[in-house]
Image 1 (tube, chains in turn orange, purple, brown, blue):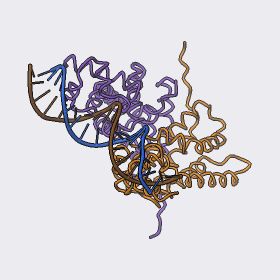
Image 2 (cartoon, each protein chain N blue to C red):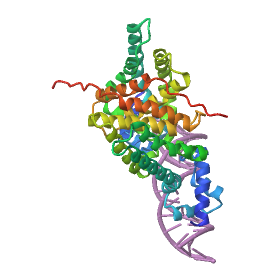
Image 3 (cartoon, each protein chain N blue to C red):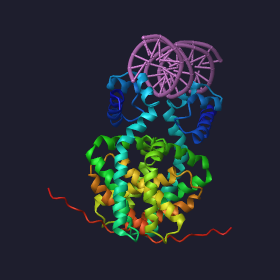
Image 4 (tube, rainbow over the protein chains, first blue to last red):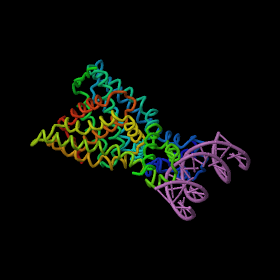
Amino acid sequence: MTDTKLRILDAAERLIAEQGYAATSLRQIIAEAGVNLASVHYHFGSKEELLDELVARKVNPVNEKRLAFLERVIAAAAPGAPPVEQVLEAFLTPMAEAASGSPQFVKVMGRIQAEGLRESIAAKHFKPVSARFIAELRRALPELPEEEFQWRVQFLIGATVHTMCGCTAAGHAFEERIFYLIHFLSAGFYAPAGKKVEVPA
Amino acid sequence: MTDTKLRILDAAERLIAEQGYAATSLRQIIAEAGVNLASVHYHFGSKEELLDELVARKVNPVNEKRLAFLERVIAAAAPGAPPVEQVLEAFLTPMAEAASGSPQFVKVMGRIQAEGLRESIAAKHFKPVSARFIAELRRALPELPEEEFQWRVQFLIGATVHTMCGCTAAGHAFEERIFYLIHFLSAGFYAPAGKKVEVPA
DNA sequence: GTCTATACTGAGATAGAC
DNA sequence: GTCTATCTCAGTATAGAC
């Protein structure tokens, strides 16, 4: 990785954490990094791809830890399915650790969430690993009807994204908020299936 | 409300529902509405305030129905507190009805959510009424420690916003998804308080 | 392969004539 | 209230120096 590219990434991360993505112009970033405007497009292609690389270098290690954690949880429960709480814990703990270690990282993720840029970002950096976790959740809840399971996964996603990236105000440690989150979500997932109301045609 | 203003609102709503807020330029809107560019700033002040009025005229009736529904629920349970399920139902049902009645409305809300514009929008149009509902939830759960209650409210917000505005793909009726949502969230809210782990200093 | 200088297009916003 | 003309600033594209 060339020095120019790294300087751009670092400057962008600092500025986006502070001001947000939309509010941070490329001209601001190059001024902070002390490089030329065109070098951004040379190294990244576009502002959006710059954001993408910026996220990748932080999220990739987290995702690796997540999968490793999940493997341990699965092994401990084998040949049965691991309980919901442990699957959620495996997903959330590495993120919480990263957040505690690097406040700037969580700020950037919060900005991405707040500015609705997670569409493409999420698809690329989160979907592949989260699919793995959802499959394990399914194994843990074999009796839940598929339709209701899929909806509960959506509730899980909404609550989790909001809690990990959206609640910036709360000054609590991430270890604490994921504890409450896992407790809440587990209760929801373990709830018996709701009665499906059939509407007569 | 002058004709020009109404034409701008209608055109903007149509285009934003289809393309999103950021992707829709004022020049596109005025072309569709057949008005002049400057008239947008004359009537609304800015693109963002145009969005704001656009949301208000749809959300205000929903909020009124929400509060009326809540009052009925409170009266039925008096002098006790209404159960969590009913409070959530009072909040979600009017939105689901509006969504079923006007697909364009839910598209716009989805765009707003997807593009992260809900920050200012939410504060203005949702916070005042949601505060009322949160107070009722608190009454229904008097034994839950305040800190954990506040977190559960955050989980509720995340799951609800994602479910009502974020999941565009799902072709299910809103009545169905709020049924599952209420069932899931109630289980989480009624769960006994989690053991607070004290970290020794 | 890297970097610099500069130009292009389209955005939202505004001033002032009518 | 409405319209024309214009301003500033954004992201992007390219030509060419090292």
